[in-house]
Amino acid sequence: MKSVFGRYIPGDNSFMYRLDPRIKILIAIFYIVFVFISQYFIDMVILLAPLIIVYLFTIKKVRPLISMLKFPIFVSLVILLVNIYSLTNYQVGIKGYYPTSFIKFFQGSEQKINIDSATFMINGALTTLKRGSTYRVEYGISMLTLNKTLSLFLRVYTMILSTTILTNTTRPILLTKALEDLMWPLKFLFVPVHIIAMIISIALRFIPTLLDEAQRIMKAQSSRGVDFKNGNIKEKVVAFTTLIIPLFISSFAKAEDLSNAMETRGYDPYEKRTKYRQLKLKWLDLFVVLFILSLMAFLIVNIVNPGINGGYLPSWYTLLKVV
Picture 1 (cartoon, rainbow, N blue to C red):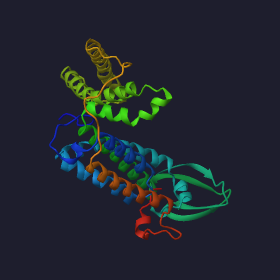
Picture 2 (cartoon, rainbow, N blue to C red; picture 1 turned 90 degrees about the vertical axis):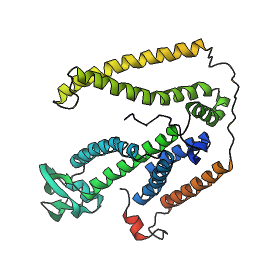
Picture 3 (cartoon, helix red, strand yellow; picture 1 turned 120 degrees about the vertical axis):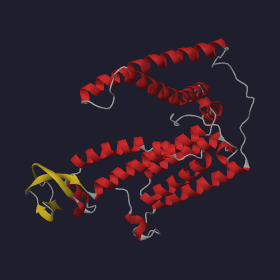
Picture 4 (cartoon, rainbow, N blue to C red; picture 1 turned 90 degrees about the horizontal axis):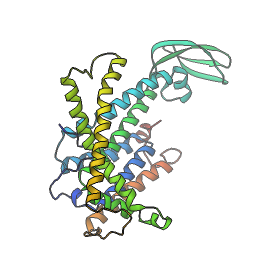
């Protein structure tokens, strides 16, 4: 199945297709910013749930939602391994986030306590040590490790899904116009807004093309005996070299074909351009803007007044805090 990321998918007359592309770009930016500054898992779920519902009602396919999980899961597993080695029993105890949840996998070298006192897990027991005491570093998994891994997974998946909805429901030419309109104030600073918008639009347009080209090259190389799945690290590096080099050559060839086609059609980025279609806001756009502003206000209040020391959020809400 071809990747849907970055690809426009013609659809029915649903509200996402009728929504102003400028509003869709601002919504995508809003999601990317707020999912990374959210302090609670429930806030992340509140952000992610509407995206999933909108995608199902707009694209009407479940399989792409599942396939988009691959990259966030891969990144999360890498971060999980890094956290196992970086968040030791001592680090978990210092953070104070469920220190008794630490499960030891293996031990490391001996270290000295460099603060007045520290309480953390040693050999399965919660122990308090004073300054100058020695302990053996333990590597393992804890609630702190899972917290950081799950938060990264939700953030990456939300970012991918929001940008996918944007590109799946917006024609490339409308995306270019929307970017140019949003960057219009930069014209006062003599910034070539149209050129930047065209570059971004072409880059987004070629993402699915390059993904399809990579799959085609992998199938061709696999038929010649190249194994991309098995073997040690050195063999995999050599195998992926047979993919990267043809992909670079193909990318430059496509870029040259595109430049020749644009030049043949008389495209001049420095000439003043007229617009056949004007982007205008409708009642649907205003309704969506009000919903996003309400959601933004709720999240900002949660960040400023986070439910402790007189905050309004319930205790069960604040327990699911991103560390």
